[in-house]
Image 1 (cartoon, rainbow, N blue to C red):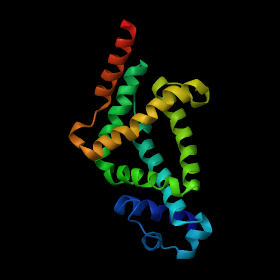
Image 2 (cartoon, helix red, strand yellow):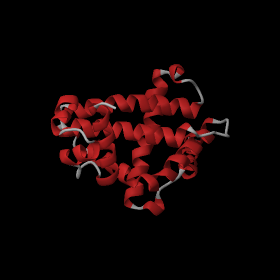
Image 3 (cartoon, rainbow, N blue to C red):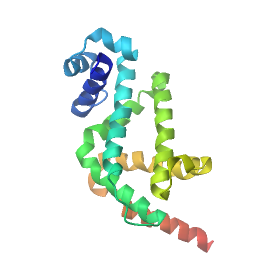
Image 4 (tube, rainbow, N blue to C red):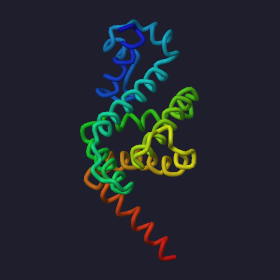
Length: 191
């Protein structure tokens, strides 16, 4: 493993242990075994490295949570419910990573390069979520599906994360979210 990969792994360790805002460059160097100058050489800044680590950590977490998901339901609402149940159920074991997401978001106005990294990651996430819920290959997800359904699905994840951080006992799971969507659809049908 080269310095770049060592730095990324060390930064992920720090994110899990200390969070985004409390991690220093020296923490990353200590965790990675790389040298301080290699952060600037490979990533440009500590913040760019931490954001890359955050994107990677969130991707690994999502893959762990949804990658092994065997969706038993054949209907899109049932798959939505199962996916959101699995995600919400994983928050307690990933509390530091969940909190670090919000710490990273707070840096966006001061770090445009971080925004660019997250914009790209969000596009991938929207497409992946639609493919998972609609049980279709990612390359067949239409642009309208990605921008509509994908945006809705992606918005629910940080929303439920924030609710978990504030009041873990009232965080809605996929079943409650599906009930809410059905209620909204039912109200629309009555109008």
